[in-house]
Image (cartoon, rainbow, N blue to C red; front, top):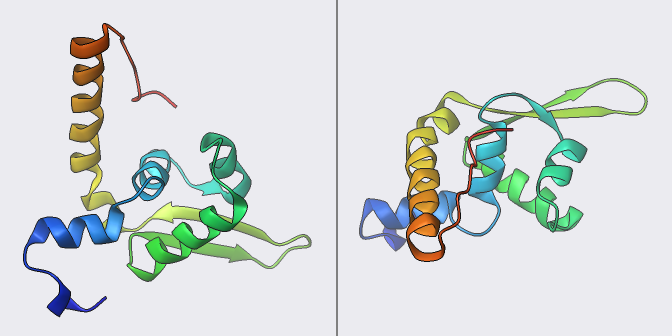
Amino acid sequence: MSVSNFSCGVEVTLAVVGGKWKGLILWHLRLKTLRFAQLQRRLRSVTQKMLTQQLRELEADGLIHRKIYAEVPPRVEYSLTDEGRRILPILELMCQWGQDYLQKTEGIDLCCTEE
């Protein structure tokens, strides 16, 4: 990531965790380590290719850790790094804002804090 492309911290944050899947991946990893298939089940409409790409980008940016076990078949687990955990308060605020927004605009109560 070239820092010369950014003019404020919001741009950097959105470049690192923006898009449809990255925030959700981080959200699902907040409570426990998950395997690829577990993440894919939680993100129902994500393709395998997209999930792989997003996980690689989050790993490259230092937000998640990928652990490979030397087993047959190979087992791969994903977890948050310390840097990844630093974004959780922002995601929690986003969750609360989304819940409040849906309640206000649609009268829908949504709970996204449970696994």
